[in-house]
Length: 88
Image (cartoon, rainbow, N blue to C red; front, top):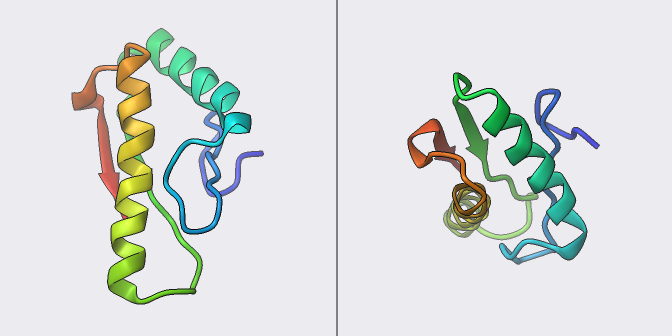
């Protein structure tokens, strides 16, 4: 449920070799956005992770795309973009 994230935030999981948001992850993203909107003092860092398959360069790029995709959705849900940093 929480994976590598810190409570109360839910981890967002991706399909292999993909950075699009899975349908089953939308509820988690909405819960995370709801929490952030009710706590405007909190800033977060999104970490895009991958498994060991693929080159380091490929995985760094994929991890960044995943983190950026989650950030994009959170911003569309109303979270200010300056509260969110990303890292792969």
